[in-house]
Length: 538
Image 1 (cartoon, rainbow, N blue to C red):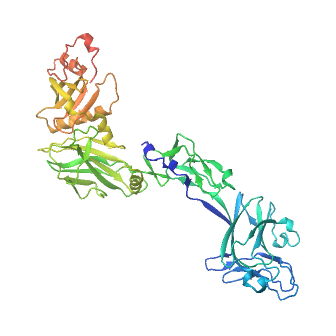
Image 2 (cartoon, rainbow, N blue to C red):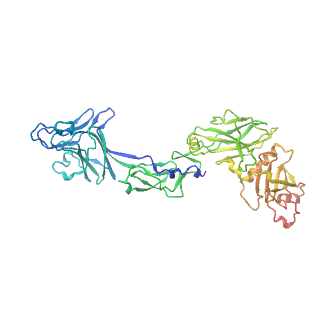
Image 3 (cartoon, rainbow, N blue to C red):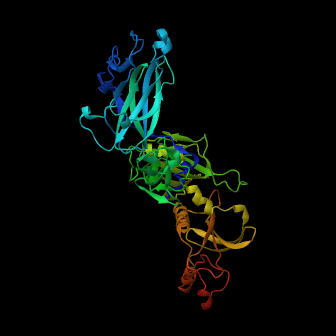
């Protein structure tokens, strides 16, 4: 089944895939499931009278420093450093450092906290390609400040617990953070180091699979990525390129192509899953003027969800004959389905309150949870088998069976004719179950042959006529095969409209030449040896 109409290409209508992914390189404090938290970074400070430096606290785990209002005539200038572990950055392009902190305003202290009190502290970083195993060998900022790069001053707000995120460009394989306090009274509650990636995944509607991609440092350096088709899908026209943005989101505005599921599979949430095949061996077990009972066998393929249910769709000819586009109407609310119409767990159903002398098309759909999602999201009906039944005053049914993977109404559209445009001219002959008349069809007044049933047609005659119609509809055009123009089976009398053969058909000629006395599909002109060459095979 060609699933162009299933994989509706709505991915062109939205700009970005909402999902993004953030990789955590470092998160402190690190707490386990029991609530025990660890945070052991290196502390450095310039010693002096009254200088305490960074101090680790618990409940919650945090680091604090508050070397202000020192009761000394000439207090020293604080210089306190907190140095992180060395962090592996995994090829990130941009690194995001989120700091949770609180700064007590100098105005909260006597004399505004002393001569060195400030309402901010600094973030420094050291980046390199060399791993340092021993923390004691980390660069000491008190001795060599050039190893550390001053990134930013932190302190947008005071007296309130605040989050602030700082972005830096990656310049190496390893990173060390250093927080420098030179007079603020502040608390460091947490530090998280992350970077963005555009995640691996599938664009649900277009079935384009995208590999995990490290996000660029900024959107002016977006990364162009070519997608591939999801498993059990194939690529159709158009490129599969998208862009990875700096925030870790996929920008699909440039996506021109798509993928579609393979035959007999359905796109469900970005995965191609097997739909159940059509029910098998549908047949009627009872029929009269107003009711019909049909049964069937379960599908040969149940799909990825083994529990199969059945839905029944009943169609009848349109009452509005002025509407040329109308072929079949739903049977309506008056019709009753026993046990019910949808979600059947059994393989039989009885349909009652039907009208007499009406040709009904009954479709049995095999469904499961996969096809239910497909119908809800895309309007896809799934696979079904159809049976055409005609109610009458006797138990004479009209039956034609076929398995479909597309709507049977589309097939009828190709062959249904307006009987009001058909004018019977004269009887040409008869044989087997029907008789053939010459007729005029349409506004162009084309000559056609119309096959109808005899007045005393039996049940077998009805079956044979519809079987012939079903076969002819499936034939490809060929110069040696009489052409089917269309049919009128929505009400009596039933018409099969064929190509008009003025010399009759070869079968009729051969039967007559062998002394068989009938006039089945006889042409109006005498058959000569030359004319036989022009006869089409029937």
